[in-house]
Image (cartoon, rainbow, N blue to C red; front, side, top):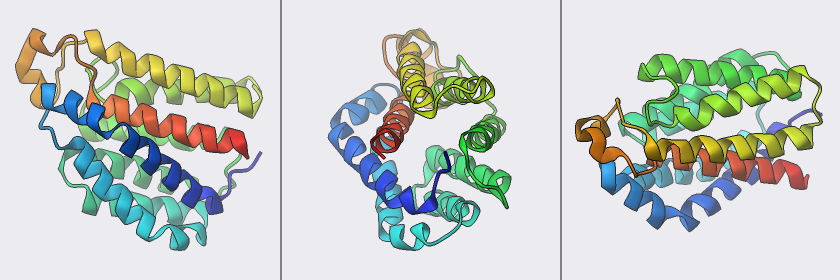
Length: 210
C-alpha cells in the first residue's frame, strides 16, 4: 500500500479534532509538571498547517514533510516546536525520491524519531514524547519486516502508542522543567507523550478508514 501526500489535509483535520477534544486534559497534564503552554503552542502550529493544507496536498511527500517541519518549527515555538519540526524535517530528508509504501514509511519514521532523540538528547524512559514515539517506530519496523498487514500494523501502532504514553506516569523526568520536580513528577503523564499518542492514533484511524 502506498501512502499519498493528498491525504495530508485529512490527517491535519483529524489531528486538530483530537487535540482540541483533549486540550483541557493536556493543559492540565502540562501545568502539573511543565510550563503549561504545550497544547496552546501545538494548536498554533496545527492551525498554521491547516492554512497551508491545500498546498501540502499538491506536493510530493518529501517537500510536503519538509514544509510541515519548517512550519511547526517556526510557529509552535518552545522545545516541542523544535522537536516536532526536527521529526518531520528528518523524515523529509529520508523520504526524498522514494515512494512511501509501508516498509519505506516505517524506515522514514524511524529515522525521524532517531533525529528527535539526537536533538533532544533523550531516549526511552525519560518521561518525554519519545516514550510514545520510540515504541511506535520499533513496532512499525518490526511489522513491516515481518510482512504484517498494514491495517493490523496500524492497530498495533495505536496499542503501542497508548502503552508508551501511559508508561510515563510512573517515570521520573530527566529532561525539561519536569526534571526539577524529582519524585513529584511521578503520577503524572507527560503532556508531549500524550499529544504524540493522540496524533498517531488520529492518523492511524484516518488510514484505517481509507
